[in-house]
Length: 259
Image 1 (cartoon, rainbow, N blue to C red):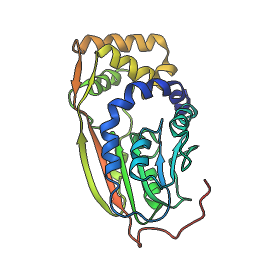
Image 2 (tube, helix red, strand yellow; image 1 turned 45 degrees about the vertical axis):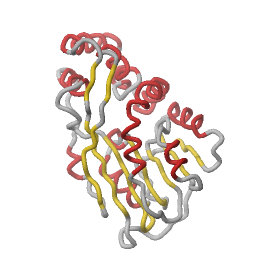
Image 3 (tube, rainbow, N blue to C red; image 1 turned 90 degrees about the vertical axis):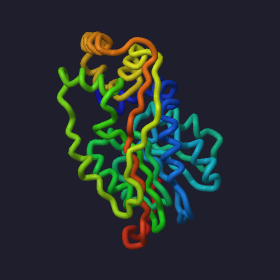
């Protein structure tokens, strides 16, 4: 199944299950946009249902804010969140390249690792910054955790699906980096069963689950639950946070925006 179509179907469940659990990382990303910003909008590539929006509007009430996402289902929910905010727009489109735009800041949480070429996307995002602009990107690296539901599900999957190429993480270089660190926050799930259901119906495994079908999902569920603990499952996954600030030499000449 097409990845964007998978996220269309997962959007409502993602909003209800994962958005509250990912809120601490959203807060981390938005709080990193500090100091005086140049003119221009704040871009949010891979905005999903736009959980960054409330914090951005609160911190930057007079700033234009633009969310971009490829999934029609995610964009629909993002536009519902942005309703009544005249300085906010949500665009359905490919967020992997923003080279034709100039902005004051770029904020993205848990979208980078889903793109076909994350390293190229990050460079594109950084190139949009006007002098003094700030990039704040949070994403899941390959080493999210050594023990927890993400880790266990990854191990179970490896028996059926080859691991993806993570070499792009070594090529994540942009000028002006001021922060590059792991950020861990506690997360909990009512049970291993609920986590598995959320991850395959409302999370990143939705496209694979739909492509392989219910028998594959049932087999995966059985293997996962056999190895998982019972009861509430608490863990502390690590995300990677990169913050960069543009300088006049790093930023390209302003170009006309097309959004």
